[in-house]
Length: 83
Image 1 (tube, rainbow, N blue to C red):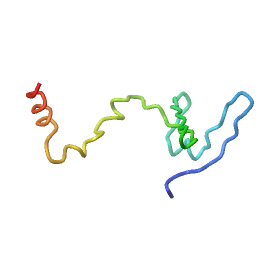
Image 2: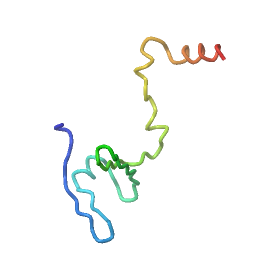
Image 3: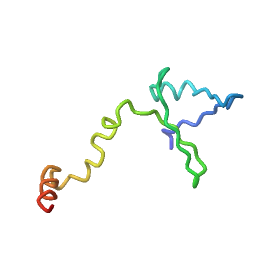
Image 4: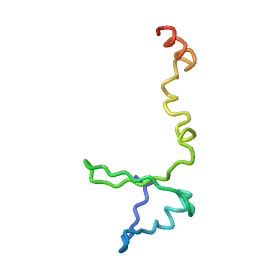
């Protein structure tokens, strides 16, 4: 938990907030960047994250640990042979 920043902002009259400087710097946010907002009803939490400039780049390599025993190309080839 020592890698988590917990800072405070105030919601202003037009529901605007200021992102604390320390978070802006660590998250490398700049003017014009977009944020994604998510509300978890079970935990009653708001989650905010920078919108990736490219979702495909952000997802690149996701699940690579699944292919430790067999190269992904071989797996896909075997699956296609079963079609």
